[in-house]
Image (tube, rainbow, N blue to C red; front, side):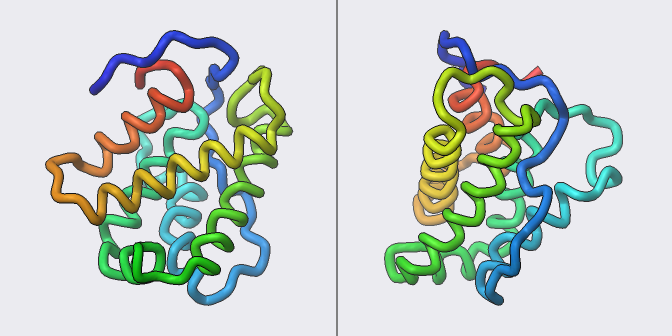
Length: 157
């Protein structure tokens, strides 16, 4: 795991995901989001681990992408639908922004919640696509660790 960059304002301490509700997604959005959303709602998924806020969402996103690699590449990759990618990003950004606004996700970040949400979603979608389309040795857990350490400016505990 890479060391976290030195920065402030992006601390997170509450073990929450970033998918509290999903507002009527289409069938394709459901296929992309459902595995992550269902996992975030389940306390039984990782009962022995206490994740910092945001991390479980990253982990479950990468695990869902790993289980559905062909589907993700087909729908979100270079040959996929730009409209679908935009809609999935919009749904994820709304959920992350809501979590930021109520203090469940990034705590006292100095940037506006909508800007942070767009930044996080852009990084997350791009990293998932890179991971799926580029031969590499990283596991879903390693990818979640790396994106968490960059976005939240701290290593995984």
